[in-house]
Length: 65
Image (cartoon, rainbow, N blue to C red; front, side):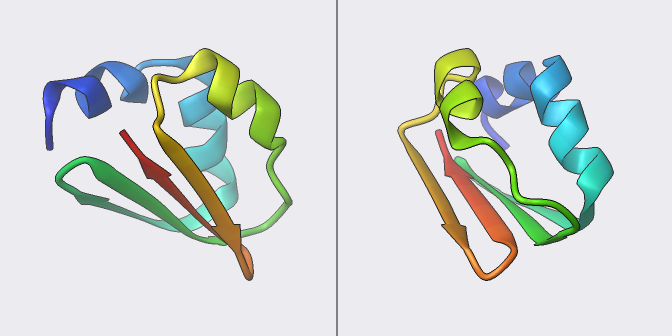
């Protein structure tokens, strides 16, 4: 896990995503939230976290830093 991801984990919006996900995977500069119980708002994620890409597909969310 790189240091950008480590800083992002401490943010409140990241904690909200962890709370609604069934499973969270950390792979280098990617964080994958599996089986989200509610659809996240993409714009606040892009504005508050230093992400390059946000991918939402079939209740899974992938953030690429």
